[in-house]
Length: 167
Image (tube, rainbow, N blue to C red; front, side, top):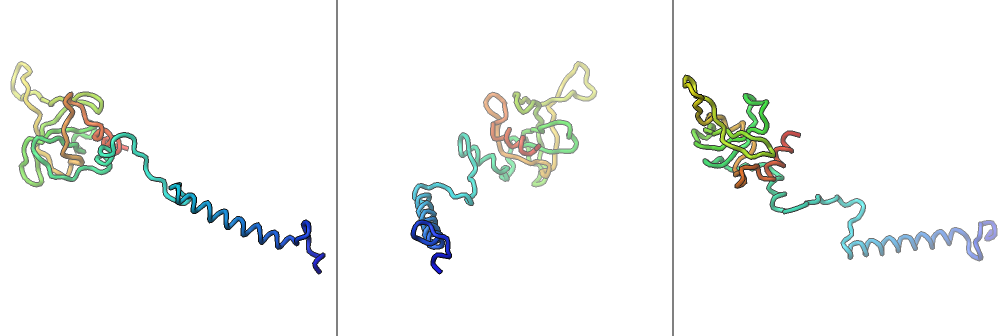
């Protein structure tokens, strides 16, 4: 009966299969130990996010600020009244109540310097202007508690937040 099985050299094929299978198991175990030793990720491991630049800035831009609103800080708003103006940026000048703040609007663009907005005074001739100040509900504020750069631009992590919010 020994000759009915296919033979390679002097060993039957099924013995060779068993030996090769055992060798594969040993190689797999050795490669797993080596990958653990070298810190190489396995195929099933999740890929960690890549952070380019400062880790602190990346962490700050990861989630919107939920701190309390303070006078003198800037806020980003999403107010339907000015839906065609993006982004909506203002400086908090007074806290009227926990639900309302008085803001001074700023004009500019995401990549340009921001300056205080003004509007023409009603009933005055000669183009006199006054600061563009309004009272808004705090639920239209979606990002708070930052300052402009010394040159009046939005900080990079705020620009990133604006991009994420409008995508």
